[in-house]
Image (cartoon, rainbow, N blue to C red):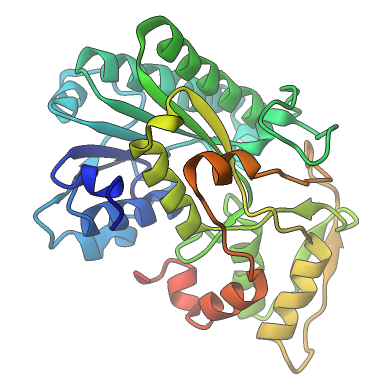
Length: 328
């Protein structure tokens, strides 16, 4: 444990979306370093099974609540909180079905939590955002200064959340940091239609179905290991240089969806019984990612897993853990 990270030991923290894919890994690490963790999740996407192994720890507490709740029960949860790790979100695919809900959760939820943070003198607020706020990148490699031109409801609502975070920092002096996530993979990733492409491919291949690539498949992604994002959150919460900053939390790896599908078939279907199928392109799907992580590396000392295929192969060795059927 680094000297910086140790400052969270004994501190009360809230992890929103704490029973979700990324949130459960963050909750797990915070419990390990001795923080007093409140895992806040409404279970609309998160699963209680993702954090069941943490229930035995005295410094872990599960609270079933929505980030949009503004009642006395939410105020009670915020009493004495040092740090908020805001990872709850309405997922990208959900926004196509219900853009109003998407806006309510991603922008309104962030505003609600920021208000609670100010009312209860929270020291630090770490906001999980997304590369989707940039839209289709026009500048490569894409740095944090890239213009915001989102091309999806999700990108718009997450940018709204970011703007609220910036306002609370600039107007009220709240210590905030924004982390923009890119194409996260790892154990417990959702494998339904709202999940990540790695886990969706895994579920289909495991069930004996062909992986479906939407569009031509030459879309480039910067797959980032979930445990790297946990480390990024801890550094953002404890390093003074992160105050008021936004960072690309991305590995910088470049893999096409075609390469991913073919590579996973080689790992999981060595006999060649399955093949890649192609479907209609997804609305708002971004084609190219070449993400710069120089700022977070230089300012916060972050390093990212670069052996994508090695890490993925090791993670896929336990399919049930990867798909969230059991704790990893």
